[in-house]
Image (cartoon, helix red, strand yellow):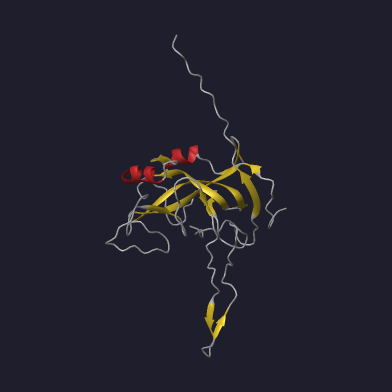
Length: 195
Length: 37
């Protein structure tokens, strides 16, 4: 039996890709507000969730409550779902849930030049690295979304090397982007082979 | 430079391919212990 095309017979392998995280030096993360007078421990976060050390399991974060809309007359009209309905399993097709990374080096609004990595803005440091995933997985031409994931490598600005190795002790810490990319090729890993 | 949307892993009109992956099991390695004579 399978759901939405996912086979019950797993294939041995993992997916490896590149992505950016945000290092929140004062704790918190997406959707959270931290009072400056109550600093929290630093956290490493993706766009929507924290990445804990070790293995992370994805959940769909689409809003579970129905969307409320007011009509022109002021009457309250309730829509059944928002843009992405909530799923009991993640990732799911048609949503953006799951832990994701890209096959290519993500150069969209940041750069891998060592001089530009680690620019501190409002207590948030962008960190480039490598993620490995498995379990329920969706493969696309740009990257993947998956059920289980861990951080396998991080490109650390010198000032944050120790902090990152404490936050993600399983991750290899690099200061040279070329070395990180060379030692962690993206793709589907089957044993020692990369597709 | 093209912007990539968080969590978007396909170009427009492309399908995502579902897979179920299981990480390879690491075989335990026996390390011989030398006992001093």
